[in-house]
Image 1 (tube, helix red, strand yellow):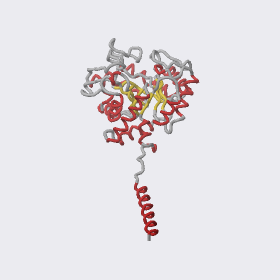
Image 2 (cartoon, one colour):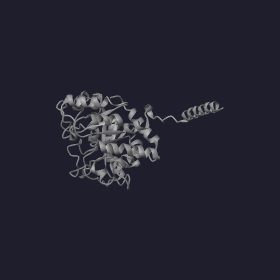
Image 3 (cartoon, helix red, strand yellow):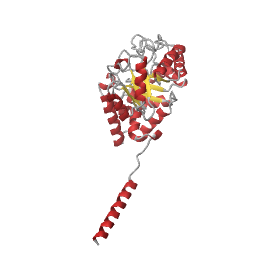
Image 4 (spheres, one colour):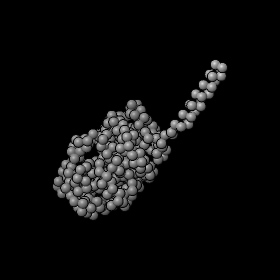
Length: 346
């Protein structure tokens, strides 16, 4: 009898375990069959300081960041071969698409690699294609360079970084730049929506306030963005800017009103990317991880953390916590990932 009882007990345990295993829910997969953790990484574009190390590669392998940002300030590589090797090594750790980006505007803003020409501003289509082709040969996918802001008078910090003061003239110059980048097989971006040209304040240090009406924005700031969109620009970058006429309580890049305006009034269907969330305009009032969550909730698709991997880690954790709590709906995260996956092949 004891033997029979033992056998029955073992059978019961086996059935219980099998039932429990069968009832365990399968992990919810997002666009491209990405796990939640992979989706969180996919919506982040991250930079790091110094040369590539095993620790950086381990970080990328674990977090699966969807974007790599190279800026001169980080001193990642100084030669064409070194840059090519760095990008290739990080790409080899990725289980999904990696977008390698840099900021090649021409003029004062060019990557410090000898094989990449730096044309003077304003840059035309042919020079843009030459610069983008050189970037592409190093492994880059995205040029964040084209500036769609209209410079408005001597107060503007954008002098030397835009195509002029007349909205129509700037609009006519922006389209060929987008075309030039696409001709090189690269993804393109326009910045800094809703418009950074009418301020003397640098968002590197604090949040610019621009008291312009919606009518003024539509007439002065948005025509160049409309031109970029008509030419198929892939990303639009939101600026760290406070426009009370758009949203009297939140900066433009953390406001759903901004994204809704970009989508509905300008008809943009590409991916919405943030400016660097480590800039003083944000961190003076909102920690980077929290700002990243607010940007995604507002409708943004890719968050930039440009310099520090520990900040990127904290941002990753904050996004995951926001999804797990329901504050950032998984459907919104799925939407952001889908927007990135829908980008043309570069």
